[in-house]
Length: 150
Image (cartoon, rainbow, N blue to C red; front, side, top):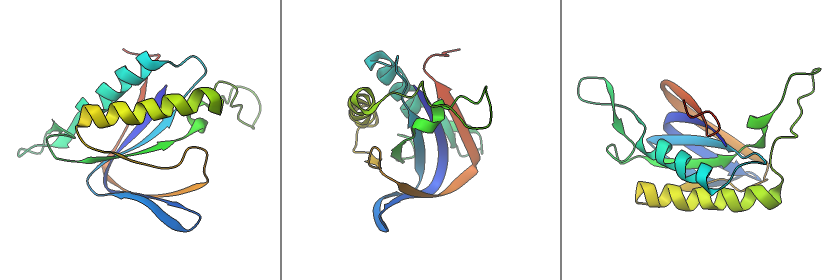
């Protein structure tokens, strides 16, 4: 399971020209689910996301978590995070989980993030054509892969 976490001042998802979800200070999280992922990956990644200390404290040091700044999460599914570009110029998405596997894990991720954060999170719609707008704060962008826990 891969996540790209962007610290944002604001972010939104528009679907079919309608605003679907919007947050102010927080994380825009793009989530890619692969065939081998399971609930252990969900639990581990949710804890990492919600406990990550990348917000500035009073001294300007990245020392505060999402909870401490009362931030929000906007979670967007993105199978292209598992693109393989080894051969040719057209990416292969063979490692990306099919909806039958990915949707239940995406829904579990939503539930775990809400429980770990202690409040509802915002989401896109799995499989929809979404338009994402954001103002990256910093810029701060971090990638995490549950298969590489170093």
